[in-house]
Image 1 (cartoon, rainbow, N blue to C red):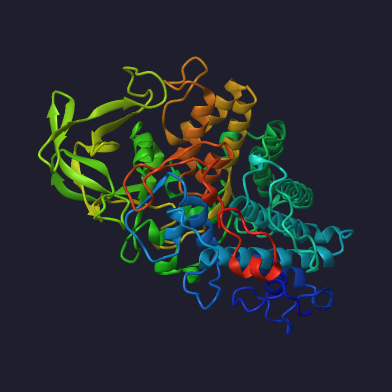
Image 2 (image 1 turned 45 degrees about the vertical axis):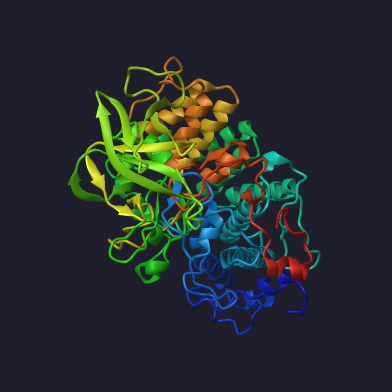
Length: 569
């Protein structure tokens, strides 16, 4: 490989050295056509390497422990949104993503970029080498196009403005050859167009998974599933709907979902579930312990357990306590009884490290009129405030939040009427199990990049935004029926003002912590209200004015290759 002063060029050639990639049969640090032609299994080795690289710990600037693509992706795509509460400041670089304090020297920001472009280089090697006229090469070629598209999608959604902000905005480098010439930031529209072309090609080439029963290998439906997301992000709703229809191929939407009875164990068994379209397949030997994704959400013997559900999200779930999705939420009870109120208190000058804390006190219940006594001795009334529509007597209707005016601020209040929760850093401790318990291991899972639950909701949103309310609700109801909660109808939105709000809340409930909420809010230019407990900033985030809704181009990239840095960094 010729030496070039280009960061991407430098990392693209370094596709070896990963113990689980099965690529060490090649003596060179560059995978070229000649080497592939010498080994009939070369292309298969490379594609297997693409999947392994996503979960391998890699060295970046001397940092390796827990430094893997899949961990960083699910943190960087989820933590800036409003579904999580970070219980305390942490030295892990995930803190900067959660607090909108990202810099171009962060290890997670640089590692994600580096590994994605390694995978893209590997896929380009396969695409340039395999003979497209031979039918036996179709599956591997399809996998290569799929992975090239997926990595470009991750890059353009993390490091560039949403497509809905404009096609001509700076995107990311589009790499569709192994050549290192002409590295530049292509416009967002160009990157999306190539992603669409690659996914379409992948769907045309692939059939069923190369390894039946293992969703760690993509298939035709996986390509179409991701393509439906891309069309949704591009606001091409007709094509989104048509793509989901094509993926279903005449089957009913509910037939693709994990049944209600087994859904509580879905994420522990995602690798083999019929609902999973593509995941990063992990084996027992891939257990990362405290460096796993699940370790931040759960403390079961070994994890950190420092990420909890946000208060607004919990209010939304608690509208229907029978919702089977509540099984992924694990409140940690103290065993003490009594009514308590938890008030989100803005940070004080004496507490600069934590933007806000939970003030915990006894609840005063005067025939349903709630109040509490503050540390200053004053009594503060609690207001019951409707969310989504007009108040109804029907408890299955829109949900309530409790608020109070405390310290001159409108503060969110959480009332616990039954059992006092244990607290972590003064915040009620509620664990999340979506990244846990594969093979019984609390820190092991096969994280899901695309599943049928998302795809059905992609079509629901596309229907809703194109004025087909009944069809949108039909898709939403498939998800709600599986969750075991009441359905909607056009004549009864249960307090919601429009079907779009119904769909967006259902996406929030169904896809929580799976890396969708931040993108959903930003692409739709919706504000994220983060005025709740935790170490994240106590503020409303407006994606149209907040420059850090996207990540900086890594320092090791822009300072060497000369590509333009994102505004605000």
